[in-house]
Length: 432
Image 1 (tube, rainbow, N blue to C red):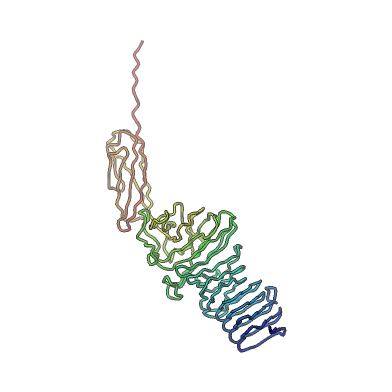
Image 2: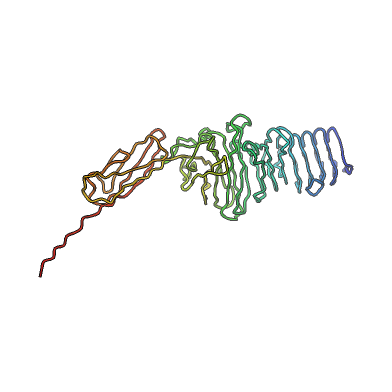
């Protein structure tokens, strides 16, 4: 036999609330305050009624909510400790506010919240112990969600589905251990923010053990095809997670040792513009993006051709790759390489010896390099940065220069063409 408990008075105060199989139903305008935990036990049914607004039923729980059966909510739940869901949570148009210190999102059953708010008045870190989802608005405010090795899924395809306090660059972010992600569903050609960061310096993402960094990613799908993207900011040297930074193509000189990102498209076919934000004052200056296993199973960092960097809203700069559609591997990193320009000057006359003709090169960034010049047609070599050619060639010639840095095991190549003007032919005409 079911017992129905109707709470229609303004405030209900209890030490703890244990439901051993009854139906508890609270209506709009009611307030329930539990100085302890809520245990919704076997066969228990809890209905928190309302329309999703502040006029809905309000539940304030100073410790845990442990759901073993069914909670159906259209009102507000204010929680100061752990959310433990081992049953069914029907989210309706409800909002769950995490208002305490360190809080866990736990249980044996993944929960989908309608709105999940990490209250700005809270403290500590909110940590997932199982996958969780949000169907409408995920409000970070100035708080920190640690997904650990799990994924937090934002199912709402609106760009405003994630909100945060953007007045600081050290709060309001999602962190993940190796294996965990922030996921967003997309269906529009607009900018989707992934507010990723971390306070850890290890793959387990142990909060508070490292330098705090907020390094977000933006993804702009190039079509309205329904897709899903995941992002993790790894606040560690990629080498510690088996993506060895010294394993690189020789066009890369250096890669970022402070952090890297894992970016993936887990469903859909939309290509996308990828934007990775960094702070030059803290992270250094970079030339573009590289990716691990650019050809699948390459086991090498390779430059993402066409990626570039530019200044963004202070203090950030941004590394961008447009129309990216290769999501066969998920590690991405900031890189620097060499850039060399070659100039042949000219044109010249064939076989000229004075003055000697000069070839020139310019390398960025500046540094100490070795040079190797060659020519086509062959016959010319030099190890000078700006060699001279004397005598000049008899035919138009292409000169190629390779500049290398043995310290970082990197090089760059460029070519130029020296035009050789042939003397005019003399045609004799005999008089009639």
